[in-house]
Length: 440
Image (cartoon, rainbow, N blue to C red; front, top):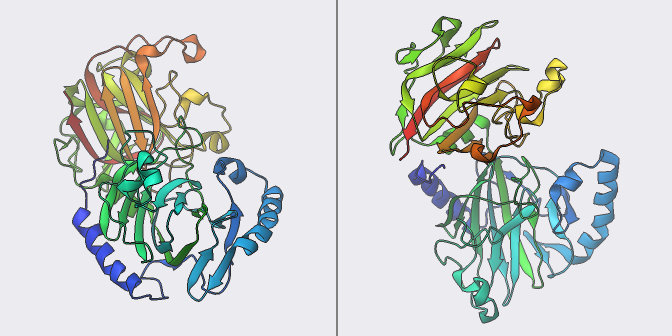
């Protein structure tokens, strides 16, 4: 959905500068980065293995602390600090950060031994692969292609194999730079791009996306591995949105000029333009829509919700009637904490990103109230894909829906074309930077 074309020259240039700093063995992190390792002891780390992070992230605080404390003896046995290096003997639990991270840029260096097989877990999920690219025993599973790939992605999936062989000879230090926004993952190894904006799959349940946030883990796998210069920069929402969106090119055309409702129809008096954004007036609503119709398309935009905010996307809307039923669907735009904010219980098919009343989206991937979110929606035939802040939260086919919320059929779900719009519901939900690309 989001192609790796944005800002590539900038990020590569920044990577090169940081790479020089790292190779110089600087103990101080670059500007904007924090060290993950204090070069004295294992403060800030605990031990876990290949286990679904959602399970331990969901534990009550007291139970989690018991699990964490129980891991420390194993960590002390197999991990040591030698100068500015973290050293593992090839055994034991994986070193795991106490802190969980959402959107981030990670830099580190590693050095390993012949026949090594290791990796870096992101948000507690495997993994950015590390191995001995000369070990012929692993050629059949891709070892000769080198390190840096998202090895646990499905066969043939983008990112599974590195784009180039970038490993240095065994015994030399290698440098990783990893950028992760949602599930979107880009990896540079020794300043060469090896994974380009690939969706990292959830190894533990491929029907679910990665957790919204999780720890960094350093895997141990039978051979000594050394790590140093571990630095991480957490990425703020506006910065993440700019990187995810990049430059609207390759057929994307703006459908909102940021000044007025030229090109739009419907009850536009119920909306206003504020700071370059479309805003539904408080206590007002109705569906405003583009004057042009669309069949298959990708729409990308940013939105900001008030607490308890409710709105929707009108997809293939006929220009009249209830958006959720007369059009292909109303795609929900809703505060993820709507129930807590309003006290009203909702069906799973009403949460943000859902095809209202038909297909439920994954919940929990919005940014905090008051922050802008970036979303991209692909409509292709009867299929819908919704990517929110870099994570796919819905990927479904309306043609296969046979059960409807409240047993209310959706007669418009099979529409082949219609208008795109916003379906306001009394709340001051904001939209900006709306662009659409037509698909064949």
